[in-house]
Length: 575
Image 1 (cartoon, rainbow, N blue to C red):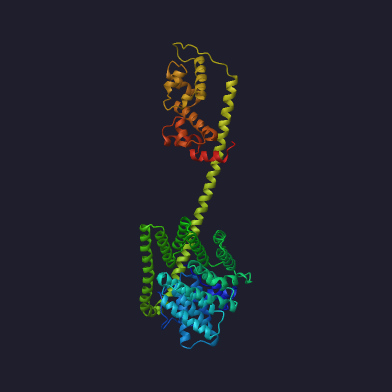
Image 2 (image 1 turned 135 degrees about the vertical axis):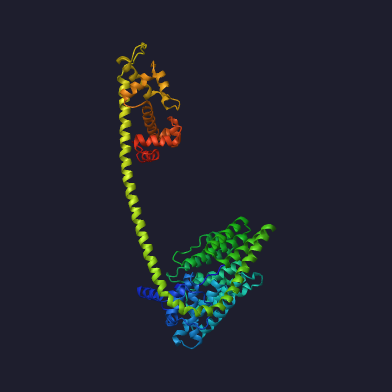
């Protein structure tokens, strides 16, 4: 089952942390002065600590810094070291009376650290009970509910390892004790979390009647607007009351839209989201809706795998096992039972591994002085690497800017070429229309067996122009000079070649390629009729069998590649 801790906001409030620029500046200075510990080996035992930088920090600074590291969760060993120093000072009677509450809070956070990060439940229980006893001696009514909630969380976390022997009624009782302690102390920040936890356990274990009074009491409380968990908890209370009244459909709809505030710390958002799916799982299971039940288990699995929560993953595999067993699917039930036990064993092995790390603690602490001597050198190396990275980034940005400017220049040149092509095609279309309207039909004279005279030359020019402009055979890959000669009824193909060279100023291949490329341009611009054809298909349709030959010829005649021209036609669809 999901369990939710009190976040850093409550911890900061109790430690007198100032949420302003002065605290942020002080925290930055502390982090800079203690940065060596973040890269040190794991510390897992509150024994003789010898690092001078950490030992010289004031107790309140260590508490704040430890809370900061605990909140980050990616550097738990530094949090461990902070809490260890504070607890050592308590055992050695080095704390002032007003600092005893800080020691109690350090014990609480050390217990949470062992429970949520190291999975050492025995040590977690020891620290929580020791801290609870100290908080009671200090009459710290605000913190006492936190210990009750965390102890209940610990018993619930331990149920993952042995669910069959877990006394869920005792866990609910522990949460109820935390609930009433929080109400009595008016600890409004802790109360919604405690209430959510107790409802989750009671609902999953069919114990809602045991907490009916607490649900009703919370529903009637007037909470400050600054408590961002209140909306979630109040909505959950409403859903639980609906469920108790037999209105299960309305309750499920309420559970589906439980509001998870984005103002919560990221890990609390994950916990509340997981808890919502867990409650829906229990609800659909009670309603005997297999498809919806399985969907919620899968949602929980996706969340815990993505966020790497091994204790929750153990619960997910158990839910799979229980689900498939209830569905009489022994194959999948056996599969997830094996996965459940394997995951549970991994959590247990992690506990044993932490015990082994304790033995290594003293040796690692002996290396701290040498690490301190090396830290300045490492810092300089890191600064050098940082400058290299900055210089490289500036160089890359410069190159990217140059490439962007080059791209702009090429794009501008392409735009000019494109407009020239469009003007050329429009002028050619106009000339073709005028010629068709004004040019008289040319009779087909019989060729005489004489050299090429002016009349024959003029006739050939007219016929060649007509074929090139209107005959679809020009776009056939078999179109040749001999075929053109046949179509214009020339006596010799040499006459046709001579006319092309003298009148058109090019050879046969150039004239044909010019006609084909212009037609390809028209077809690429005609989205309505050719918009679904590829460049290769258009090339083949105008007589080019070789795509590479088409690309080279197109660029030779237009100055653009076919793909660049096609892109411009889409940019200027109306031209």
